[in-house]
Image: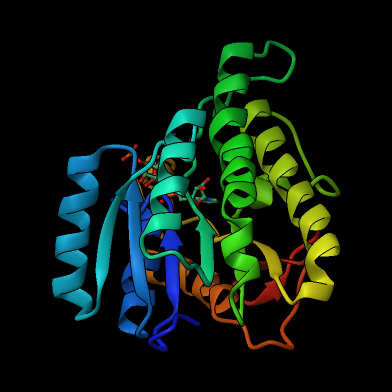
Length: 238
Ligand SMILES: NC(=O)c1ccc[n+]([C@@H]2O[C@H](COP(=O)([O-])OP(=O)(O)OC[C@H]3O[C@@H](n4cnc5c(N)ncnc54)[C@H](OP(=O)(O)O)[C@@H]3O)[C@@H](O)[C@H]2O)c1
């Protein structure tokens, strides 16, 4: 909780799709939302529209999670202002190799997927960990995918699958190490959602519904789960 009682939440990739809707729902719930996007102009436009739409405080932040320098600059800025953080939603994600066979992989695409979906979320979480630890109710939500579940994993899209499986591993590692400090870390699968990413493959799930399960994890009570993987509030197999 922030000094003035308003919790602060950072959502990455908040300029469109699920991230934008998560930011909107958190702002509507009274969170001071920091809406980040890799394109600063898009972050500013989204923050302005979200603030008007949700009637809450939304601040833009330029952040390319695939860039170490951008993460460092954003983290330094957040330490200066607002100097606190209660919720981190690692939503920014890219599908660089949907449909590509694992027998003929595009290793550049696999590297690109790892940079955004895995390294980006992991580096950002670590860069902001001291702020989260200082929160009374810290929450981290890693927006993953059922495609990253190892137990029932199928073929194709190796970069996307591997990057989300690795993201899920960070959920397990960090949740274990941070449990005694009250930092709840979970993975979320939004389902097959009609955004730019899912819509091209015929996804029909409304973005509001995909975001709701993420917002639930971002706003868990102190006795809520940690180290889990959930879709629509129900456990998913890692
Ligand atoms: N849609 C689905 O069916 C589905 C299913 C399972 C999981 N997911 C996951 O849900 C999350 C959101 O997906 P979505 O459906 O909303 O996808 P989307 O509509 O394609 O939006 C992706 C968001 O991530 C941002 N992004 C990509 N690379 C970035 C980077 N390097 N730095 C910062 N931001 C970056 C994009 O910014 P730009 O506008 O700058 O590109 C955009 O804001 C992703 O993690 C995705 O893997 C989606």
